[in-house]
Length: 560
Image 1 (spheres, rainbow, N blue to C red):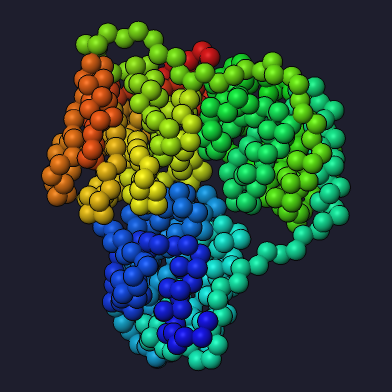
Image 2 (image 1 turned 180 degrees about the vertical axis):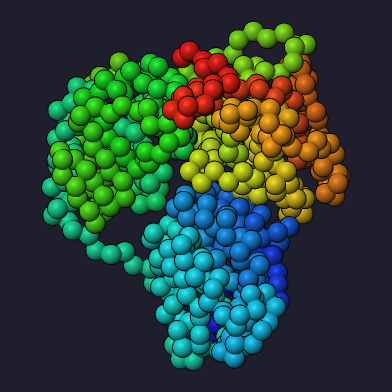
């Protein structure tokens, strides 16, 4: 690259070279050089958000759909407001380029007391705070800008984690002298011979097994092995299941898909099949509390764990291997399995409900399952609403995003905005509870501002249902939320043409779903249920957790 560029122009060039088209953020005086550079670049779009937390959630959603995202705030209050969302992206292994506009080098060197600081003359405090939830961080100078931007971007892309770039306002405008290289993202060489040996051991265990089964998860994406792992599944005709955080990782219409495994919490036929297997392979799946049914999962003795660059097999642990290379080796070694006598995923079963009856979990979630279409991207909020959809069978090409591990309520509304901008040609469906929605509701206005037409369902069960079923006293006042007129919110945020409805009966729900399926505008539907109306997965998980913690069980578990 031979043209003359300023530091901030080179940073913009780097964003485009990793296929970033949108930057989410809130402007601020120290960030003006970055803000200006984004807005003056014809190939980048500034996506202004109502606050920095919303911006970080929107970047998270964009990264989930697009693969990588960018976030920009000002120094101090701006960056700290975004940090919760950045932490969620870190937990989910999502690369987010977090650019923070800082005071000038001269100001920071002088130790002057200046706004957006703690008044102590220290200017590295907030970057140090970000270190815990980013893969690496840097503060740019003219001397280090080229090498540090290269390093930072390489780590973000390879490790799939957020990274922090501090840009002093004067450094941003300085001109880089000499040759300016293009981005050069390299992958560390792997140990080829050992990888072949480990792949052979894994293949041998699978080929000798009578009933092998794979548990697949998001870390296949993190290590660029999603497609190669699917090749192994199909060449080996191997049955596979997912856990809650990894729902719809592969098409749920795939003939080898068994369904959702969540320990002893739900789905007895699948649980019995997996726990009686003579070879289980954990392939990129995290063994978290919600994934394993409050650690109630039981694995057979012959269980192989492949997570990132760490592999456990036959009592041996191997580190620093390439998961993708091992998966590709496996595809050459697997012998096709002929046993297809395994449980096939059927999804939710709808029972008869009178049209005039109030909406219940049993009548609601099967209707939502039937509403979804091929290639929908479904963004489901933390809590009972995402759990209610856990057992739904999604159509071909549909994706399901939830924040199971970090679990920050309010994430889904702005995340849906980011996902919609990343894939504007697909339907974006936001599923949120009203308590979570209240935290970040301003993002509704941004959908219309940026010409997006989401379908939004707000489940109003009069408070924090997930907290009611997990705490000691369900009706205690901290589980209550302010009562809002939800269907009037789109108009309050300047939206004039969306279809809005409030439904309390099955008949009203059916009518609203029909209208939503035909709508050419955005859709906003408030769904009313009673305050303790709980779907089976949430009820069973709460029972498991409460018994373990010595708390009463408030919702009767459902037999599966």
